[in-house]
Image 1 (tube, rainbow, N blue to C red):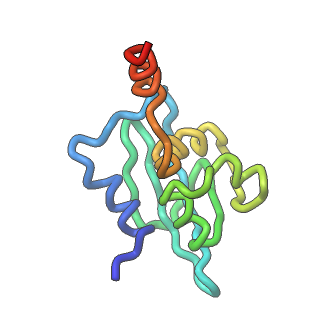
Image 2: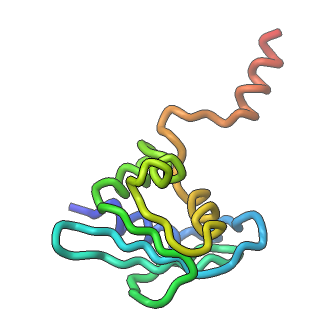
Length: 125
């Protein structure tokens, strides 16, 4: 059985070519994901692209969450920003990196591209 969290982070590294991230935000973001009595660490380096490693190195921003909750984030079932406001995850350090990382997370499963919706509405008239 595959681990969705491992798949998510490995997917960041496998994208060919990876989509460039907007803006000029650069830095290292570490995710500390708790699984019972152990903590998994992922270090995401954000430049124009995002690259992930299993590392416990220093970071400009640290996100701490329970691993099962993070799985909900990477499935688009939760919003990272709303979760931070509800204290479902903790964010320390450079918040701009957290916002940039949020762009790597999928939206809700039933979400639609607003441009497509607007185009379809224009054709329905």
